[in-house]
Length: 121
Image 1 (cartoon, rainbow, N blue to C red):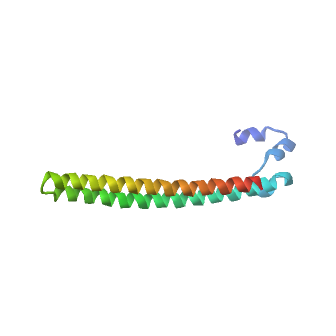
Image 2 (cartoon, rainbow, N blue to C red):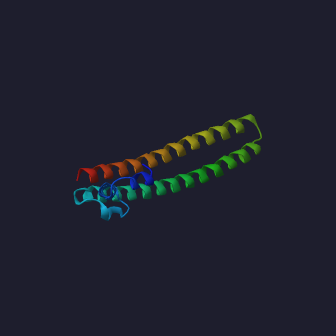
Image 3 (cartoon, rainbow, N blue to C red):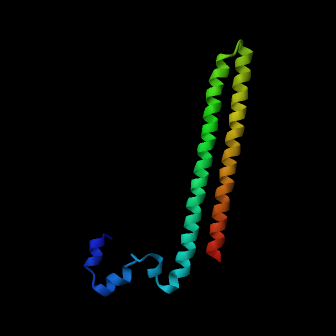
């Protein structure tokens, strides 16, 4: 609802829906839920920022490896060298991506498990 639609309500109704005071204006019965969800939300955002930072570091490392690969290809002297360079590159890339995505999945699994535990408490 737009803010002006609240202005058309009788004052008692407008006060009932007014949460502009933040968590302090929430009725007491909902206070534990709001506090738990606020704490979990803060933890999720912190975890998201950490995961995004880790992923950006990973992409930086992989970009360096990709650029080094082109240089290694340029240094090849025979078809066997090209084959070995490609093989090494793709083996390493697959291992790096598997490791990174496994790490990110573990991190998010921990966050959701903590959130579920907080909501169950």
